[in-house]
Structure formats: C-alpha cells, structure tokens
Image (cartoon, rainbow, N blue to C red):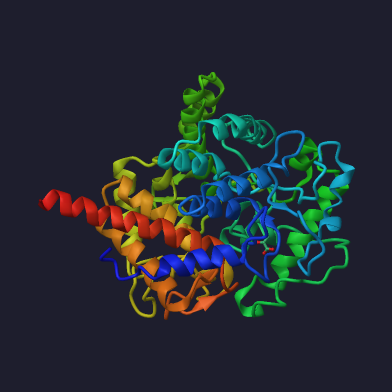
Length: 443
Ligand code: DGY
C-alpha cells in the first residue's frame, strides 16, 4: 500500500482487541465501559475487516437489548457495576412493561445498524445472519416510524440530546434553555472523572440531560406519554438522514430475503416527500433541525447540515450550495487560521464554537466518515480525499481519540476510542481502493 499509514492497521486492531470484553466492545476503556448503540454498529463494521464472527457477536449483543416494543436502546449494560453515570438502576426501566430482561437505558440512538449489516454482507455474504437479524431491524425501524412520528410527516423526532449522538451540540441550546430542571434527582457526574471538564458538556447541559431522564422514568417510558411530556422534542437532520439511508439498506436486505417491502417503501416515500420542507432553508442554503416544542427551525449552523449528502437526500443544486457557500467558506468550515484540520463540527461563525469541547467544535471521525461518503456520492472527490487524509493524519499523530482539536490536531476526550479505530480501518481500505482504481485507469 502506498498510503504511508499502514502501521495504523495493527494499531487500530490492537485498540479494538484491548476494548473487547468478549460479547461487546467498550467504546472507550475508562469513559464508556458499556455497549453503546451507534458506536457498536461502527465497531462491528471495523471488526468485520479482520474478525467477522466477532463482528456478528457485537451485533447480536446489541440486539439482545431490544425492548419488547422494538426500540434498540442507546446503552446496553451487560456487565455492571462501573463508575459510569447514569448507572442502570438510575433509568428505572423495570417500570415499563416493554423493558427487556437485560439492563439498558430508556432512549435510543442514530440507527446505523441496518446500513452496517448490509455493508458487511456486501464484503462477505452473510445471508443466514441477515435472516436472523432482519426481524429485529424491521421492528426497530417500525418503532421509530410509529412512536416517534410526532407530526405524521414520517420524519422522526428525538426526545433527548443523547438520542442525537451529538449531546451538547449548539443545535440543542435553545431547546435546552426552554427547559427548567425542577426536582432534579441528586446525581454525580461520572464523565469528568476521566476526561477534563473543559472537553465535556457544561453543567447546565448535564443537569437537563438528567432532568429529562427523570421526566421519562416518571412516565414509565410509555411512548405516547413521552411525546406528550418531553420538554425536548426535535427533528434532527442527522438522525433522519441516517434513518433514511438505513431504510434504503433495510429495503435491500428485505429484497434479498424475499420479504415484502411495501412498509419500508412507505417510510422512504414520506421521508423524502417531507425532508426539504421541514429542514431546508433556501435563504441561507443550509439544512436546519426543527424544534417541535417551539414549532420553529433551529437556526444554528453546524456540520450536520452536510449529512443529507450521506443519505443522497440533497439535489445537485443543494449540494453545490452546501459546499461552495459553507464547506469552502474560510469563515465557516474551510481550514484557515486557526483551523488546520477538517471538519470542525460547528461553523466558526457560531458564537458557541469551542475548539476542544465535545460537540461544540472538535473534529469527530464518525462525521468525517459519513461525509467522506457523502462528498464522493456527489462527485466532490478531491474534498472527500482531503477529509479522509485529515482523518488518517489525526489518528496517526494523536492516536485513536474520541475527538480532536481542529487547530493543532491534538486529541481530546476518551483515549483508545473504539469507533475511531474501526473507522481508521474503513478509511485505509477506502484509500487502498482509490489507489487501485487509479492504477487500473492508468494501465
Ligand atoms: C455520555 O455519557 O456522554 C454519552 O454520550 C451519553 O450517551
């Protein structure tokens, strides 16, 4: 290989092995000792490159946390105790008739799993495994499209910033400011034990994260009650883009199995029909999230605006505007002093931009990976290549960290972060494929 990063392969595999606790992989050895939903999907993708049976175990373990009504939760606590907060008892899921026998959280996370399973199958056919996993995927997507279809548009809503996977994104600031945490149960943050407080969410966010859990547990996780009472109710561009793409992948799996696809087609059609009207702001040329409680778009410019490219939901004209007016704009996302590495998670024009704080500005490998695919899909090959290179440079120099300071590339958050390692394997394989393609076209 001519990439210059080839020793990243054994280093990435070693991180995934070290975080392996046999039935699942800890996202981070100290900070995240349980199984997280979308982390796990990405980890399975990386594992499948060198240990397919172990990748399938990862997925089975995640599915074992599925609720009786179909939700696949954001955290599955296979082994306890740990110093992670919230501990499983805090969620009180046993008060829901839908709770599974395994301890889990009571909320969900971006549904990447169907996409990952289809991709693993594309590399190495796993028809028996698909037959096994398909009913769980269908039930999860069905749960999203019924219990989270708050306005009947087919676009799903989330009820907690943790469901977005981008916990303290400034996208949620105004919705969070509308929440007055009352009678918040006593708690002690566990997340600032292993990581500097300046790289984690502010206390004000955390208090609201906990308050929301308290609201949900008082409603015993009854889905209709949560929609009625959750003070946080938003439609997230990232979550809906990931779900749209996952529905396409689910449809492909159904076709392969000879299962009916009408229901999935219905979800896809409704999402596509309503996506632009809800999220696209023509004036600024941005996709914006929507606050259903306040009934208005959330006018905050973050890198999530580019994620519809990953799902193929943008027209060519929209894609051009996103790239030319925003991605390449040195005041927003383009690397220009003080930024050296792409892609900062928040536009530099946002007053809340912070270089090292969680989802307030650092580079996240997951976003870079989703967007590399999105850019390539719309023919922005050179930008896709630059994004892949930046990701590999960051991991090569600073190790597999949870996120990176876009100014100097130094690592932040958890060390030895599993999905960064898994995605290094993905980026390296993609890069090798590009090199092969170039050689073939020169020959
Ligand atoms: C955390 O604990 O910070 C997680 O992001 C919540 O899922």
